[in-house]
Length: 160
Image (cartoon, rainbow, N blue to C red; front, side, top):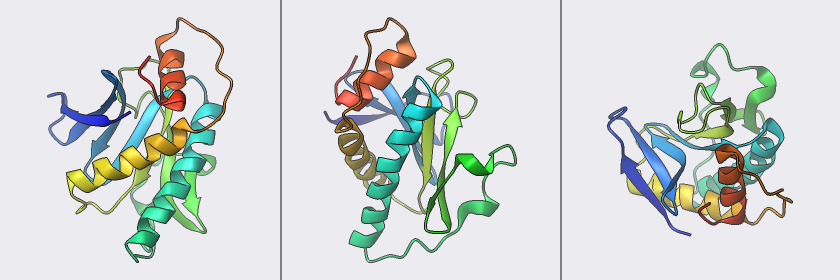
């Protein structure tokens, strides 16, 4: 499923990522994020796949993951929430206070990219992440909760 980018007006530097008409994450200067996972475990599993995609993305550009984002992380980010490639911080797990606010109680992850990365390149990276995350074979129980529906949609690669 193709992703689209929508400027919502809530924040001029943030654009929502949408799939099937539902917001599943965001793109903003210096980061790409996905949310809507019902729990931390689902977000962790998806973030591991996303970090692999990010590492391959850098390798394809023959760029080392040389920037350590540890100085940019929020003081409230716990060490166990940081995502790393080798010893370099490349992202973090997030909960609804950082994520797109559309999914109350949702969990997700945010990957850091160079702030000079063009929007089209970030969208391409987000699309690769979404495709790989959708390949996860996680059993999803039927639910009426919006956050859990979104998690199932992201993992299945379909809009809920």
